[in-house]
Image (spheres, each protein chain N blue to C red):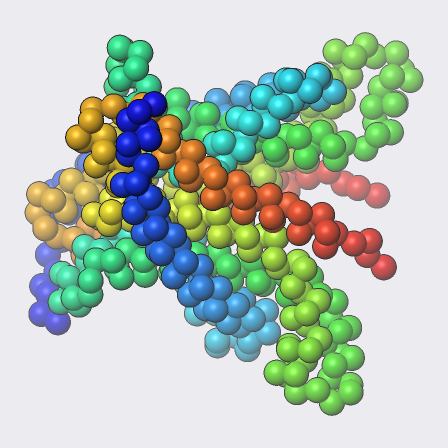
Length: 222
Length: 215
């Protein structure tokens, strides 16, 4: 083992890692927001609708959940534009993929959340004369969001790690930055000695903050 | 359509590699994961703590980063192992941590009274695990464990990034020759789907079957 550590290159190009991390977080944030919109819409749509609607939603969920994210990223970036004769840049393509991917996981989360709402709450809403819309808006959604909050924060952290896959289509996030420095300077050990703590500390910090949020909004059940 | 049919025999070869990588990882991760899960639940602190650190670090990193690191960093440190083993090993290390957490969850769900009862009738630690705890924890373990198997098959697609010709890379090689990305990516997706959906269904059936009313 005669490997001489030399961090000079890593510090010289640290901007690529710093901005990469920022982009990773941004991608994850857009992914979770878009995923929540898709997941919530589909979970509400699936409630009590006809067989066809529910079948289509189930097909979407099962397809996305059982195919590697890497393949979905390629499919959206290379596959779909090739047939449609249009193109979008890598970042847009990845954001679309991540949203569709997150949506499929979050449909299930929201469906479970809707099932977990105490029946009595909805009956109480009906008893005080709320319309179905009002019941959804003021009773069902606020309660469900508090129930699913822990699952949402887990999904967010998981998406944050999944953004590393964007490096394969040259989205300049953290892993892409790491690979760039490595291929240009060959300082692999040093690069990863810096990138690994960046991923870990960011992930753990997010976890800590989100756990605080969860505790703040946890439902107290008697 | 004809391209999809013509590509099938070639993709089949890739599929076998995907299954091979996944198989090795599933077995390794199961054995090591069970050991670590047991350590997380029952071991004294000096042993449980390093396992906890391992699990938290490995699960906190993106799998792709882990694979790149093991594949490229080991040679830099003059550890020369074949690329196949580096990539498969990285995937195994990742899945081991996940299986360990599943095992820990299953073991912790068993009431502490079961351990006490086993101890009261004079069973050793090994006997308590083998005859009392594991059989009961099994039904809690199996369904989420199958989900880690699905994750393994999906994660194995990342070994294509370090040049292992699995299903994912086979698909891309065919695309490189035919310039028909859409049909081939769809075909590849369907092949992954076929394997994983079967496993998911199995997991759900086991879960339904093992669900039981608690005391």
